[in-house]
Image 1 (cartoon, rainbow, N blue to C red):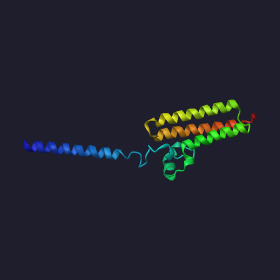
Image 2 (cartoon, rainbow, N blue to C red):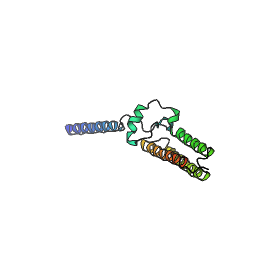
Image 3 (cartoon, one colour):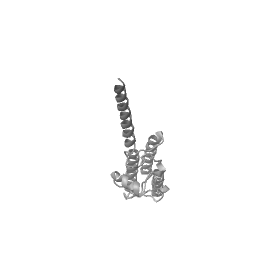
Image 4 (cartoon, rainbow, N blue to C red):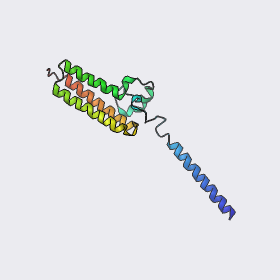
Length: 146
């Protein structure tokens, strides 16, 4: 009877050890990257393929403030204002472009409601900003001067 209890206890200890080892191995599933960095720490110097995120993340370890999402959005709003001042963007085009910027801001607030920005959320915002940038360029260069 004692040997049965000893065997049972040893198997429970072994099972608990395996469970602990499995959870600690699973904790590093992102390849050592922290997907929950704050927005200011997220890289955006190149606006290319989002599958390239890991390489860009490692390469751009010294993040600069002008490469975060908020700074990109501010730069885009400045481009819209400059386009209006130069007559390249009409009032109606600017309204639509600013509506797009507000939608990006609303999405960013929604993503940050839990206090962190995941890799997928960052990629989503990066794509939205890329599309907004392309829309600004298109409106500025569509040759309908005001």
